[in-house]
Image (cartoon, rainbow, N blue to C red; front, side, top):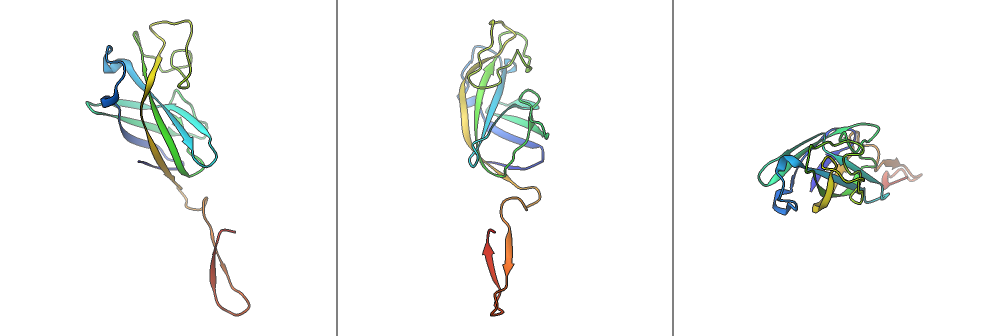
Length: 160
């Protein structure tokens, strides 16, 4: 499970190489598209890592917090806090790798046309899992209010 915090950058290590799909190209011709889905409101964010370093069995991804998410720059904004699902899709290039609009798929179903060696192709799903995003400030999900009834006994009530 990935642990993240709202309004901060994220570095994560995910197992990708054991499930590699396109083994006909070098690791330098592979990037990974991550799909994040919030469990509560079902919002979806896509992002390629700001940096992506492929090791023999796993890949290190870094993402940058930004108020405006950007799939190609690795800018993320995980709100609301809580549980999210992630899916990692392998994208491969035959020619020069360019993670940019028109050269890299923006979703797992995106097919770029016309086909060219400089356009990435989604090969398929390589891993998936859960992610918990904690609050940076600790005030967004749950608030406890003290309630004092007329008897003078203090109670703590959950919620509002």
